[in-house]
Length: 595
Image (cartoon, rainbow, N blue to C red; front, side):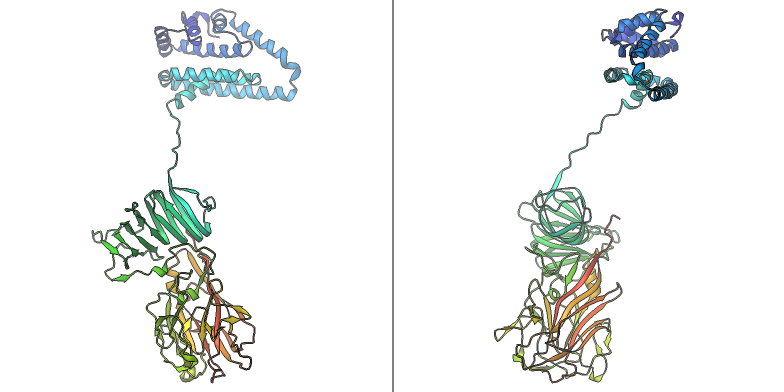
């Protein structure tokens, strides 16, 4: 204890009034002044509190008792007797291990006490400014201390430690997290899978601001302001406000009803403001942004300055606009291509599944490979003409052109041709790839290339191994010999940011002719950049269908499928009809993480 000769006059009485909450403002000011100017007063203040805590834990003593123990020479004796009383009460219950733990804690507490005192002297001026808050915290610590007698050794440290903690932290206000704002609601899904498994797939789930990466399937989001957005995987977006979102990569469609005009869609290089409409947007792997307006009007702005200019233009129903990665708005006139977008989520699972596989038969119908194409569209292999319905030419074979015919109206098809190797290799792509192994054929063909289920004379013609193809769930491409078609894999890849094309798969064979006395034959071919990757020579309709899977690299450009009459060049009454069933490009995800 502090030597009584150095005890500041009346400080005991003032501290007693302070702890009993009966001190006046003038008396409190007196304490502040003494603690600020007298080092003996500060030491006495700490010792007074230490004695008060120790005695209070052992008997609920009042501040007056502490006053008497602190201001009289026998204070140390009184404290010693209280400790001895408690030791006698609990020594019999404590074992050697508990006593050792207490000793270690006392040593650690004493060491920490010395450190805390050093910090207390350095921070004392700040402590004075926060005195009142410190006292409230002290009272709370006193209440907690009464609950557990076993940690008395820590009590000696408490008074000094509280001083430093309050000095360092009393000025900090608690951070109360803001309640996140609901941006949109998940209103429909099909086979949806997010890259982040914590994101919801349950219809009706509330969505908040933040990034979302859909790696499989479809998801429809309805914003609070009423705008509806359909996401087709793989797509990476960020919900920003109730009337604004960001498309980093992939494709989506937006339907903005009356009352929600002004919905804003941003991309890395463009900003689109809706004027009450329906539109689709693509951000390609190359960083190009495409706007396709299905109906209404949309204002398009470039977000990146080119030569100090910001390009802007309003696009209306049926129009499309393109901004390159540098923010340059293309001056070329484009038509919107609605069939390249899923505008409504299918009611049931389709063969083409975003993030998993792309349906090549859907591309024959002008679709994007996920069920958006026309199921009753055909292509003439002789001149590349695209037309609705099915043309059978009354089952009569006609002579075709030996040229490769580019297709410009279908984005993902490079062209078509009539295979006949009688005069050498056959051109099979717009980049000059040739079919060196093409056999000599009669150069005739009978039917257009089509993707639907066709009935002739009351009989379905897409029967393979007893199963019907050319349907919604079991698609097929039908080619009569002699015909071939080439798909542009690079253009398909460009439409699938976030996915890789890793393989081509199908089931192939001759269709059932419906006449048992006929036995048509044909040869089936699959080429990649003109090189043969699969062939089935002399196939009969009674033969089992062949399953095909061809791995594709990122450098493979053109995929060609073809059928020739082979050795049976006279044909079989137009019945050597090849079925390329479930023709699919198999997809794998690429990294869609944050930049």
